[in-house]
Image (cartoon, rainbow, N blue to C red; front, side):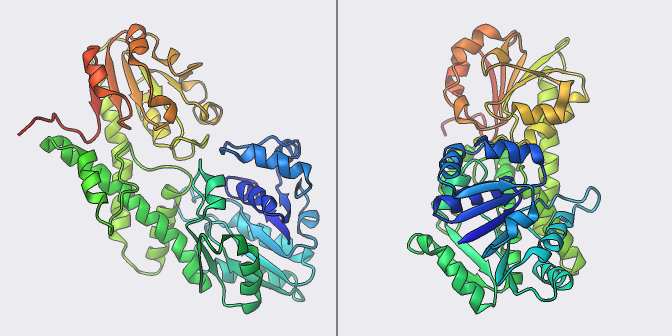
Length: 438
C-alpha cells in the first residue's frame, strides 16, 4: 500500500519505519526542515533501540521517504496516518488539537480517490467527527473514511512493540475501511488480537488504558510509603500481588512518580473530558494530585539529607522519564531537579541518552557529567532517578573513592544495598523498611 504519515515524532517515525519494513511504500511528512534533512540521510532525531538500522535499510530499498510537502506526502495514498502532537493546554490541561485540526484541513485538498484517514494521535473523544467535518468542508467531493487507530507503542520499546503488538484497536463502522485495515494488519493476525469497535470507543480506549496504568503506578507508590512505615518490603508485596492474575505483575515497581509524554497528559485530558460531561473520575483525580505530591516529597527527602552540609553537591543519575528513551518531557527527574534548584544546591547530572534534551530544559542551571562515575566526584549525595540498565551494575567501590560524603538515595531501588552498607554508605531507598526477622 501507499501510506502517508503526518508527523515524525515518537509515534510517527517508528510507525512509518515499521510499515516500510513490512513492504509498504511510506512517505513521512513534517514541517521541520532540519528534521527532514536528517531523516533523509538516515539519521534519527529521537532515540529508539533498533530504529536507525531499520530506517537506513528502508531508505536504501526505497520503501520510505521524507518530505515537508503535504501534497507530495499525501498524493496517491491509500491510507493517511495523522501522528502529530496533542500537547496539554497550559491552563486547562485539555488536549490541544490545533496540530490535528491543521493537518486534517490541509490534507483534505490533496485526497485522490478513496482514502482512509487514520488518526493515531491521542485525541479527545469525538475528534473523528471533527476531522470528518473539516475534510468534508474543505473538499466536499472527497471519498474517504476517518478511523481511530490508537497507538500503544512504549517509548524505548517502540520498534519491538510495533512488530509484537499485544492488541490492535480500530475504531470504524465502515466495511470498506475494515477490509483495507485488515489487509494492512494481516502480518499480525496470528500473534495479536485485532479489535474493531466504534470510533468513539476506540478514542476512549487509549485514554482509559493510560489513566488506569497511571493509577496503578500511583497505587504501588503509596503502598511503598506504607511498607516503609511498617517495615515491610514493597517488592515482596508486589510479587505477592502480581501472582493474582486479576492484578498482574506489571507496573508494580515503586519510583519517584509517573511521567513522560503520555501518562501526565492523558490523565489530565481524561479528567477534563469527564468534567465537560459532568462525570466524576475521583481515582484519576487522586492519581494526578498524588503524583505531583510524590515528586515534591522526593525532593524534600533529598533536601533533608543535605541541609546540614555547607555548599552541598548532589549527583543525579538519570534525567529521562524512564530508561530506554531520550525523552525528558514530564520527567519526574526534571520536576525533582527544579524543586531542588529552589534551594540553590550544586547539582551535577548524568543520563546515558537524555543529556541533549535535558540541556534544552535545564540549560546551565545544573552541571553535566561526562559519564556515570564522574558524576559522583566530590558529591555529598548520589540520587538515582531513572532506571537505566547501565546503573544496575554500578560499581560502588569506584564511587566510594570519588564522593566527599557517603550518602545514596536510590529512588529506583537499582543499586546493591548490602554492598553500600559494607562500604559505609548511608543508603535510602523506596518501599523497604528497616527489615527484621520476626
